[in-house]
Length: 69
Image (cartoon, rainbow, N blue to C red; front, side):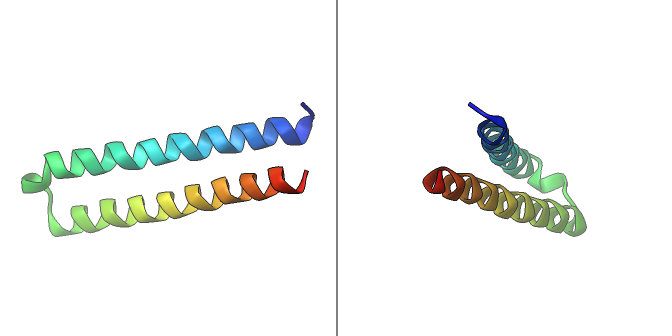
């Protein structure tokens, strides 16, 4: 496993951990929904969307790299 293989593995792990972070954040938002302000809710929803999109892009990038190898 060369440098690219290690990089792909690290990217995949990072993407999966980020998706788990999104799930945890969503769970906490649901749990404390009554205490959140509108701005707080908007912040967390946007954060989840951005991190999830970036994580999916990372996973697709790793998959495409593995297909080309």
